[in-house]
Length: 359
Ligand code: ASP
Image 1 (cartoon, protein in one colour):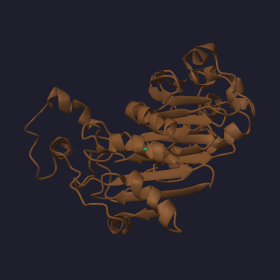
Image 2: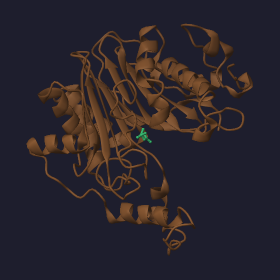
Image 3: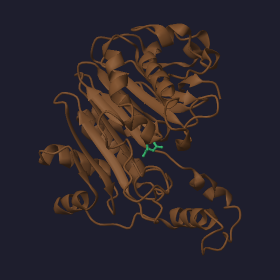
């Protein structure tokens, strides 16, 4: 039998949970949204939407689209800034490594007009997996290359092998390793508390997703990540899985995600967001309804996964970003406060995400 947690936990009204095609968010959610504030516009809108770490990406993507660059190339150039940045430890160079101290990256791209996609997973030593994903789309008949095969393919296309593990990421990994267990041969970490600037490196996840539409109505998206930090070697998250970490349908809109990828893969969630938009939901409604579905399913997942608390409420972080072909957009998070980046054609900035649960 299905176990349901109290509806009082939800910030959404019963209409969200019960209605087949329409969600009526409560006033407090409405107050948080900015996506629908843009208002329906037929065509001619230009937008770039990203996870909160993507302010430079949305700015760059907008600049390039204004110069006539195709939206897919524009979002890839945008996320390349973050892939190249050693200070973003959730993506590309400087990303936190797997349990063996090796950085393995995942990325995907999808192009609205052709519905084509490309992806790489668990690729090592290549700083810009998003660019390799685009090559998989453009230069092969495949959708996804993994591990060594992905690396060989990148090298064949002239990419250079690089050490992606920065000292900062290595030190964080080392501390994680040394504090994992008192039943192994590692002595406790020498540094009990990492210095202030190393504190954030103990975080366990992060990713960048960037979506865009240009004046001609061309939609595109990219998602790129170093995945969950200290993951098992070979673990692949949602970011390179089309339908999970990214989905684009030029007739409807685009969606992408950051957060615990396993929750996303199990629910084909970015595809779901786009499908809900196709049924007439706004980007925000579509994101929230997808989060609500995931929360509902999570109650059935094995307790041993640690993805729900005693009341059945999700303990994991998950965000969606959505952009429809009218140029309406939204970001939404499972629990608490979160932000996302938007360039709406006039200004670039962070906005509040809608949320399903109060923190
Ligand atoms: N979604 C990414 C993954 O599961 C991680 C994240 O976004 O935090 O690999």
